[in-house]
Amino acid sequence: MHEALVAVLFAMLHVVGPGYARSRDARLIVEAVADVVEDDAEAAANLPPDEAKAFAPITSSYAEDAALQLYWAVRESSLNLTITGDGGKSRGAWQLQLPAGTSSAHAQARAWRKLLRVGAKRCPVAASIMWGDCEVELSTDEAATSKSAALRRQAKARALLLRAMAMGVVRTADAR
Image 1 (cartoon, helix red, strand yellow):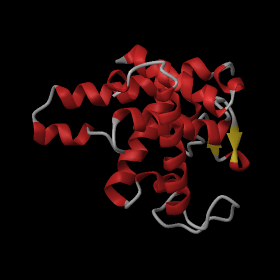
Image 2 (cartoon, rainbow, N blue to C red):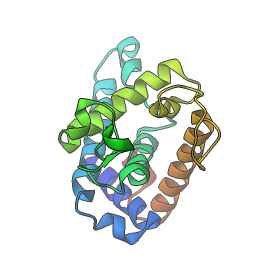
Image 3 (cartoon, rainbow, N blue to C red):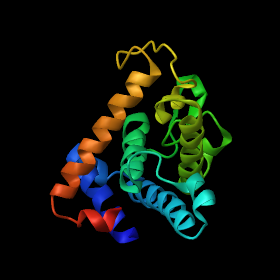
């Protein structure tokens, strides 16, 4: 699954813009996303059903989880692991306001996925938690609330994933 997921994530980056796949931290971020998502898939496959639920896909599939996470890094940092934003409060590829934002690609990816799981428990749209709350008002041009912004990003990530898979890089079943 790993090679197939990495291939489809790089294809997705080419759909977003060819420069993203060649960016300095692209390989590290793609590998980290694939690894943390695959860790969850492996855990879910090796646990009893009641315990496996904690590692189930957060969106409709593990591939879509990976696409959302990668697209988030594109939007938040243009795939830069060391960038600082929000007046120094947010750091890393996913602009985390956590110590993990200054850590390795894998630590950042794990922290973002963990936060997404918190959002899945608390919010109707898991990714809305990335703005601090399920329905916070945003002061950006992106959306009126964190929920609507998260829904748009999730839809965009899904569309990019489908376009990347349609490019024939891998079969859909291989990237699950």
